[in-house]
Length: 361
Image: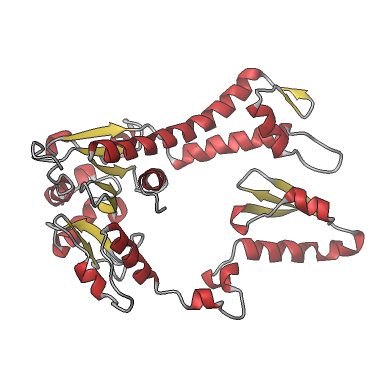
């Protein structure tokens, strides 16, 4: 492969590789999540190695064991990695930053005992990940909620993802929290769950504010929480609260939309005699509102529908994240975000809002 060809292809991160497959006896194809499709033709004398190449590349891109990731494949550990602290300590130092408290090096886990203020504290109730396997070892929770209560109420939310604080504004006391949906009619710990959510409604920063406004942001369309037999919160259970639905579709709808977009990109991109459609030219045509893809004409309504459906998904997520950040920054309100299981939509919204709120990130 020439330097010029390598320059055009750019870097292909292993994490962007969706699939590697053989096309025929002397070529294989790499399909990326970023819409790139690359076909490699081997020389005649190399075709015997095709299966080995595909197997090796697949093993690199999709390792069966964590230790087989490229990051761990080096024979020696770089000093920059060897000198890093443990993940738990790095997490505590991030909480230390959020709480605006600084401790000298070597303080160790004594940090955890001092990470609290009038309203919030750091707990190690999930230190062995038994309470919730997908939550960190240390969590920021309301100070009024004990570890015993957290253990009881964890079953009130899907996959035990009970409300925890992802970010807090130390100056105003407003917090950004996340969870999964509560279990609805199956919720046997309804009182404990309501107590935890209510604890996010701390007093406001103004003397006239007896209690802080709490926005409960349900990322789903409003009908979803009824359709799956579980539920969303009711404002009747929490004083000075508001439930907001963002209308973001679930992961299956997102995948279908992206699949449709990529299918048209793959099919109608600019075509040469020896390579598959080029995604770059198609995206350029879309941006320029062109109707000709690869020399063919596609119905303008089809282009509009495919493009607008995907961009609408992205648009709603961006608007949702900025809306959440605006409520925390301008109203000093607290916000609890969740969808069904508390991943995908929830993490996208919480992560985007944190990026907008905290210059450190």
